[in-house]
Length: 357
Image (cartoon, rainbow, N blue to C red):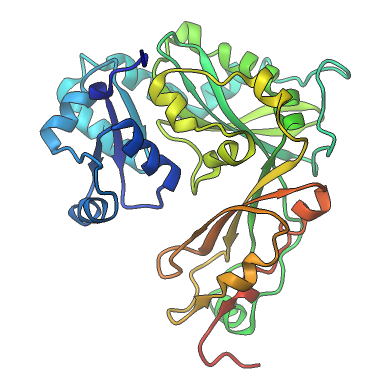
């Protein structure tokens, strides 16, 4: 028997980039959604046939249930969730307190950084690929289950860019006129070694928060900075995972669907999963230009895709709407193959009409 009640689950969707894996999970698990805008509702009904879209009253009933499973596709939806909750504050007082706690950066910093010292040498199996750069970011998607226990669904390490590449002439000119930074990318990776090295410490840190505060049934995205082998808490975003599908990375790396685990209130068997996983780097790349491209700009997706040795997944983004033209999931044997995207000239794959040669 599936240990969850679908009638008490809900995805609150903003008119923002939404993971295809999330939408597919909602359809397969028959979990209803609420659309923030009429246009979004129209798009979902057209492109996600079979997805149950709730009206305001039915969505409010689920939100007011203190034991419901709620997921947001955007941190911006937190305001909407809190506004929807005002009518039933007494019923969901625990959830509101938990959300506010996870938003309280300074209190969390004090609680988590007390146990943030990294493991001693030999206490955990490290990544055969090492970790890249000083002050590296370690990010994690997780949730507190119905018992208040932290369940880790994915851990990713950053590949920080040390310099900014040259943009194409047309975009560079626009950036110079607007005094904007030139093109840059966002890049995170995971591997069996990364999970083995970071999982025990992150679980230990998060356990310091949950028991006393009784945080339950809440997904969240948390960020740390690694300094001198210490994990220092940076930020937590409640009720959602990482933006632009970074939380899909465990699916490509380890066949772990984080959304399904959350809605089913279950946990990955990390030990068995890592034992049967290939010792490769799986990485996520957001081809971020740093600012909006000119209105007539178009991305050459075919040429860009050719830069990957092993492409696991690819999602095109609308340049009229986002500062990036794609989300890509790659797999590599070497650190060099991953690192090339840390200083990549994404703008060179964007064509602007009448651009000077």
